[in-house]
View 1 (tube, rainbow, N blue to C red):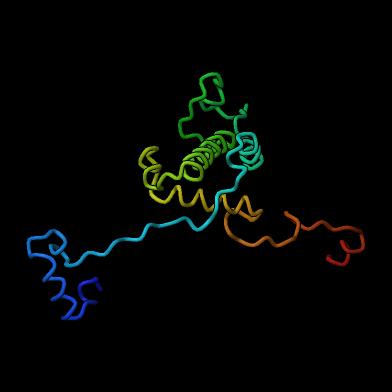
View 2 (view 1 turned 180 degrees about the horizontal axis):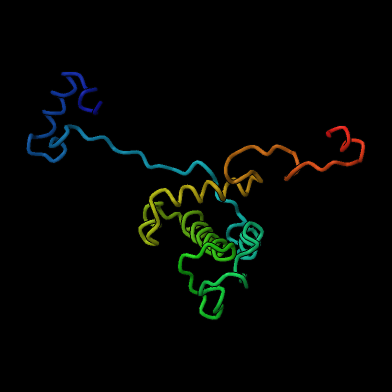
Length: 171
């Protein structure tokens, strides 16, 4: 409900005595409310202002970034001196692009406090891209999985059979 509907009749008549019908405040939806300024919920880590620590953080998350796959036949991997990426699915190309996006978001969103939509329109990203990257960066800082699932504590892969007796018991 708007602010005008919250006013009782006496309050509205008092406003009408102070303001004329032609005043801009009385046009449109009635009495306009002042919007509150949105503040960020989370604090930016202090070490984000240190370029070396940010580079180390991104390089630990994307170890294949800025490397070349000799099996791949894309332009970036075939001609590393040019450095252009055109929709390649090899791991070094994907991680290089994602590392670049993370650095852009760290610089503009975390440090410069630029709006999500401004970054997305500037770099022609889909809406919601910056929000999901910010969420993944926060999870990486906390040491959690980036997809939000809890860690199981079990080792990866198929379980190994440790002795011959366990192998014969299975058969």
